[in-house]
Image (tube, rainbow, N blue to C red; front, top):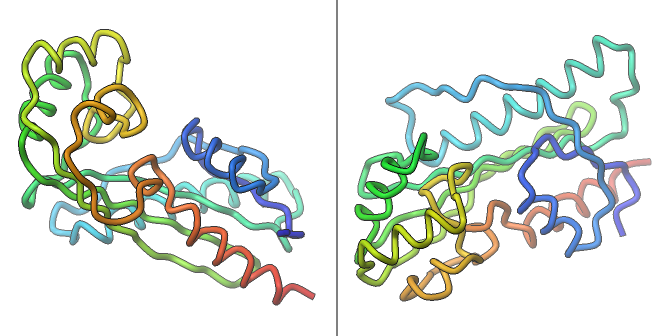
Length: 199
């Protein structure tokens, strides 16, 4: 078990669920963060860049409040969907969500989650990539999913564990939980390794 306290710098309910499933004790602290990035940045670096900004924002807020930040894990993650070379962001509205799922229909895309873990002066950063292949989706299926599940807070306008994933995904290559928003087995491995080094 991980002894060092963990702060999750994310309000994602999927990430919270995955940590709970892994029986990692944690608390959530979120600070609004600028999630912009250089458009020339390679896709694998983008979610790491954003995750680091999230972790730093929480750590800096605690420092500014004279709170203890030593011997605490600051864990943050961000997920992007990449179709060919296009970054697919969260949809702003129903129309955008329909357009995104129509683009993904019948095609393969990459889901990349970047993770940053900070402990004292140590920082571990990595990204995990999962390849997802959708069956062709009808407009009726896409509209049903969007109207019933409201996937507006999700990169790529879908959640693999919801109805659209159950009926629409032909195959995945890589970590299933990475598509949910956190490559949880690797996260636990990294936390455990660092935790064992803490005196």
